[in-house]
Every structure is written in C-alpha cells, then in structure tokens.
Amino acid sequence: MKRSSIAWSCTAALALAGALGLPPVQAQSADSAFPVRPIRLIVPYPPGGSTDPAARLIASEIGPRLGQSVVVENRAGAAGAIGTEAAARAAPDGYTLLFHTSVISTDPTLKKNAPYDVKRDLAPVTLAVTGPYLLVVNPALPVRTVGELIAYAKANPGKLSFGSAGQGSSGHLIGELFKKAAGIEMVHVPYKGGGPSIVGLVGNEVQLVFDTFSGSRALAESGKLRAIAVTSASRSGLMPDVPTVSESGLKDFSAVYWLGVFAPAKTPAAVIDKIHGSIKQALESPSVRARTLEQGNVPQALGPAEFARILDADIQRYRAIIESARISLD
Image (cartoon, rainbow, N blue to C red):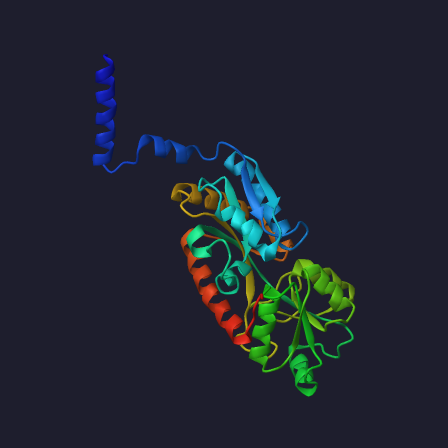
C-alpha cells in the first residue's frame, strides 16, 4: 500500500471514530495503560502523626493493585500549605496525589492568600476514611462525664483551657463547636502539633483536648489521661465503654474528621476512577479494614462526586465556625 493510502486510511479511521463518538485511540490507550511508573502520594504533614499511618497503609495496599509502587512523600510546613501546593501544581496525570485531612476544608476561609485554590486546583478522588475525636481530660480535673465538664466550666468561668495542634486546626475548631453547643467559655491554647498538645495535657498546662484515637487512646487506657466522650454519632469499637458527646447530654452533637485523596485538577476522569477503584478494593479487604479500624478510622472509599459534595458542605460548615469564633492565622 502506498504511503498516501496509509495516511488516508488512518485519517478515515479517526474520522469514523469521531462520528461514532468514540475517544481517540491514543487517549484511550494512555488512560487505560495508567499507571506505567511509580505514583507519588504527598502527605502535607510530618511522619509519625495521625495522618501518616493511614496514608502508608493505603499506599502499600493500592500499589500491588495498580501494578506500580506508591511512594509516600511527607511535605510538611505552613500548616499543610507546602505539600498541598506541590500537589496542586503537579502535572494532572495521576502520578502525583495528595492525602489530606478535613482541615483542607478550612483553607478557603483561613488561607485566603494561599498559592492554590482548593476548588479550582484540586480534584477529589476519594474520601478514604472517617474517624471520631476523643475528648480527653487531665485526670486532675474533677469530671468524668460531659455533663460534669459543662457544669464545672459554668461554675468556674475562665478556669478551663483546651489545647490543639495549632490555630485553625481540627482540634481547635471542634473545641469552638463544643463551646458554642455547651454554652461555656474555655481558653484555647495552640501548640505546634498534636503531640505537643497532648504533652501539655498530661502536664496539666491545659485541661482537655479533642484528639484522634491514635494520639491519645493508649494514654487514656494507661490512666495518664481520662477519656470522657467520643464526638461521633455512635460509639467506637476501640473504646466501647466511652459514650458519645450526644448521649452524654449535648444531643445531636457530632463531629468527625476525614482523610481523603486528591489529584491535580484536570486529571483525566478515567485515571481518577481507576485510583478510586483501587482504594475502594483495598479498604473492602477484611485485613485492611481491620488495620484501618485499629488506627481509629472507619473505611469509606466514597467516590469523587460524593466526596466533592462533602468537601463543599464542610467548607461552608467550617467557615461558619471560623467566622463565629473570629479565628485567624494572622
């Protein structure tokens, strides 16, 4: 066949594919072949925190399912902004992903000058897991229930301080939400991380903290702290004897965090779906589910559309808390 005939045949084939509404052969094969090299999963926090173990568990499990290694890269700094920007600026090809917490929902309100826009520059892939906060107090505080805590705060105005991982952190925002729901006053003490806030609680620098299970469960079980409630709608299987805040007197109070995966905006939908599918498959595995629950998290693996709706709702919810409490990072 002459070269001109070959060229005409290729052109005709492409035209026919377009007429039938089929995707171009090259684009279709590129998406279906994904991935052909290792994937980078950015965690915008230091190693060893509550986010890092979940990211590493998921990375280790989806790698074999995708046929490529998934490497966790900790890019901490600027309250998560450095790692988030690195992911937002990466090529939209699925080879750079971001593993972030629900704290990213506060960025549009607290980080108005951030070099990225959460809604414009990132694409939700999956809300991987959710988890409750554990309300822990110093054992020297003479309270054992949420009701007693509220009564103590009202009888001793200005004497209660609650710690958090920093200004605008999830523990800070949940503390403000609790204050408003309970009608009490507490002083917020920001620390440089979740670990230091728990050290401050053990040392009685602050009297209570809303923390993750991975951060304070062992200390509560050893008696160095006292767990008085969980913030989820139902009790946790890890500490079934600890009641919820709602059943302890603040009816309908519920606050959970989530950990989710994002990709740079404009990443092909087929690639996003493939990544989501691998995470969903991993989290449905009995062994991975058990390890996830042991970390204090509940597997979810919600899809991109549902994750986007939750992100939108949380942006609005946290904006209301931030504005009401006049929280600022300045």
